Image (cartoon, one colour):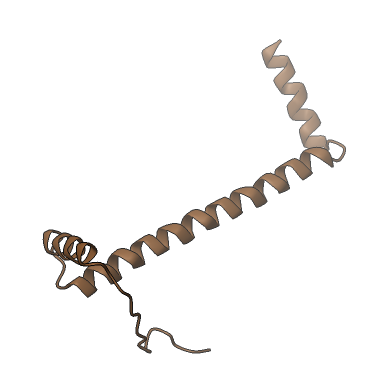
Length: 93
């Protein structure tokens, strides 16, 4: 497996002058050491948020499928469930 942390890669992009001025101002106000530092840290944070949100949605969908499948294909109640049901009915009646 490759160790991507040890490797360096370039990412080039073109900005309008207006975008560059805006980003540089934000970097300065945010206390970043450079425009590159600002862009890398901001994009990295947002990328992690997007991935996390997506994984939560996928997990949530998978959990919903498992839950509804269990509701549709339930088995016979076991002895513990029957006992608890009787106790519940006695206490709430």
